[in-house]
Image (cartoon, rainbow over all chains, first blue to last red):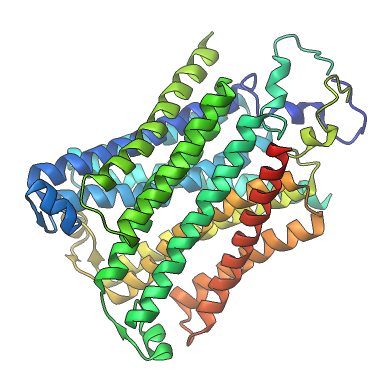
Length: 163
Length: 163
Length: 163
């Protein structure tokens, strides 16, 4: 690539491309996390049907159930809410992290590690309920990964902006 | 563009540009979905004022209402929650999908289709309550679009990474 | 850069680069907002421990507390929910806004302004509860910024697509 400005690192234009494996792994993990969250939605629906515990009168009427709070359904909804609180911020921090030119192996470990931790988190929250601190540790691992990427990226970008 | 690496497809650098209509439609639909969600927020506020049903003591004090659960407000909040569970994952999957070099017409149908389905979903959930399975079908359409894009993108990126 | 297509504005390839200060400020604010949301999570946990008010039986058993609704915890959870309703849509609208070639000073004011407003919003919601309309005004400022960016970007992209 012919660089006409001098101030732009040529590598800058090659961040959001599949030729950058860190970005490829990011996209792959983003898709897997989306599918995992969709799985939680399906699990909610399955348990609403199974327990005939619905959220709206028109649903209860249609499926001959009741508008009622069910423990199993509420547990899965808490797992879902925990996803909503943790996964979008991971996707934002992980996107920013790409601009810090991380080692591909490190970025891959962080992205894939977060994805695995969140899958396990959902399993022990909603499917096979294990005693604490199992769930707490799985959540903490993902939280620390997101925090590391957000802090590292914020410092990196801030220094870039002011220098 | 002069390609100096040989391994990068030139087209790769033209994905996130308005010259790529698929990306333009993606951005447009993202903005419309943002505005739709903001509309749900305004609808919540309108009904909190109308029914004087607030969520915090300081709000109730200010507006001479009560901290109380109102059926209409809760229904709109459920519609909003459904948005939070479905729209961010669509935006993530739709972003990844851009790297699979989809046909512009197909990508446009998926992006615009999802947007229309979600607008209709909100209408039948919170404004004009229709008997089920109307809302279920509208939700399912959007869910399938997100799922298709996430699975297709995950496979595409995975194959790209391992070959 | 050597432009071989003629139809692509050269500047288009320099949007998602740290050499574009508007993008740098966007990334920085995204990371700060992620960290702010993580702070709300930590505040929730701190208050769950302090009041021994947990959300799951296995948590209560582990930490010798109860599954109970606590006012302080619920207040922080409402602040968190408000973040989930407002921050992801800001990140989406702010991303689209980059393609409208905004003045760097204007984009920076909007991004940084939103970030400051949301930090203050969390403080008056969950830490130092001030009488309304303090929180309402702080929320409104962020809402208007998101709305402006979404509408402006939607119109800009729509015109680009149809012409």
